[in-house]
Length: 62
Image (cartoon, rainbow, N blue to C red):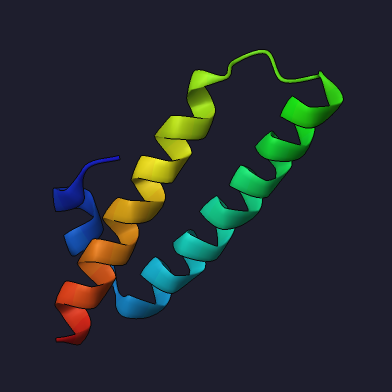
């Protein structure tokens, strides 16, 4: 996910996407602790995506 793509979205869409990514991160962490996670790099990707979404969201709200 690129920041340019996020800047085209509305504030409501960004909030919704942030919640979805947070839920996905929770699920991945749960899978990691139960031993079912195959792609551990996905956790860091999701964290970076959440940070991008939150950054763009704050820029739009300012």
